[in-house]
Image (cartoon, rainbow, N blue to C red; front, side, top):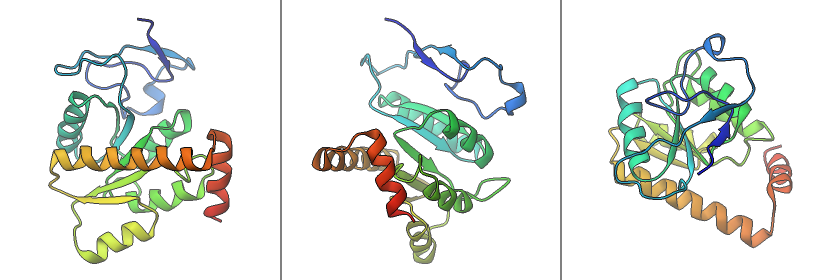
Length: 190
């Protein structure tokens, strides 16, 4: 099988790391291996997920679970690393913690919704803040779904799958390709 070309270097633990940009190689393209994950027998990934969480233990637990369920997982520990990754390639789904240094994930969400490329990106907030007010606020800022910590891992998988099915139905129903889809997103968010 030919390796996939991705703009980030491989590491033993993750496909994408939240290392400072200065520490990354300057070449635009790097070959990234597809890690062998126990329990995953598919040649292809179900979807690409960007997991943005400041807590390294939560990031590791969720990324291991999702990889075992057949997802390709990119991880970032802060909003700036997430923005750098999103500038290179868009995931299929973004899992976003609202407590991110140096700027809050809540601040990142409206920023992503204003950008043409990420306006329709499916975003699920995964946050320790679980009051009705927090959930309303996250959904009002543009999140597609909201999950409170501690997370039930199978629930995260189910919500990701539901968002992906909805995206596929919308694209099929409107017969919209990638370019036109982002133009529609820009007009919806103006």
